[in-house]
Amino acid sequence: MFQKAIVRKPCKNFAKGITTQTLGAPDYDTMVAQHAAYADALKELGLAVEMLEAEEAYPDAHFVEDTAVVFPEAAVITNPGADARKGEEVTIKKALAAHRTIEEITAPGTVDGGDILMVDRHFFIGVSDRTNMEGAAQLGAIVEKYGYTWATVPVAAGLHFKSSVNYVGKNTLLITETFKDRSELDGYELMVLDPEEEYAGNTLLINDTLIMPKGYPKTRAKLETLGLAIVELDTSETRKMDGGLTCLSLRF
Ligand code: CIR
Image 1 (cartoon, rainbow, N blue to C red):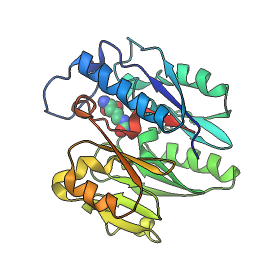
Image 2: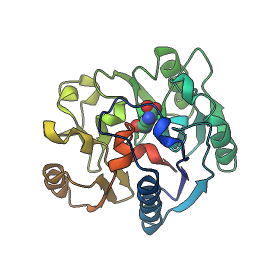
Image 3: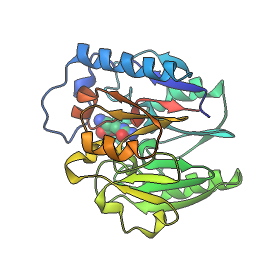
């Protein structure tokens, strides 16, 4: 069960972050409102939410998920894969040190938390443009010390592994078609997204509730078969910057 979350207010500069999307310029006031609604949703699900100050020097710093991998025994501070994002982890390390033993990924290893999916005592480690093999091996060695298993998975599409694969409870992974024949996912039920709704793959399981992006009815219908509560949130501005629901928080 998650009890806490760390989030960070988007900075005024957030539209200068990295993006591959061509959905237009995001609006700051709308982003702040959507971000506040996200924090409120986590609070309504019983989490104590710590909202860090905005970081004007780091336009992507509200995507806190990429800067750490947190599990019950420790928090691994990452070395983010994009040069413009290196340094975001400094304030995250301070915040997490109050809650967990700190471990760290060091250069030349790089890891973005968006590539890391923990399911029970297993870590999927996506190897992507942001997470390299060296970073994956460092993270694997750390989690192994604490008794977890791990496997790397190549990220052939999308920014991060969790852009395409997420755990939605009931032994089920919500995945894009690209991942449907990957042996690393054997042992799980696979719920394959409609190609038009791949963005909704980034659905976030908080205890027994699924938080999904608003406006993906085919995915909602599939998720309803799991029998869990579902909350929809508007993520329009986050999406313009290549982000989704998982990226906006660290849960533990
Ligand atoms: C980036 O390209 O790094 C940000 N604009 C988006 C990061 C999204 N993070 C995530 O999916 N975990």
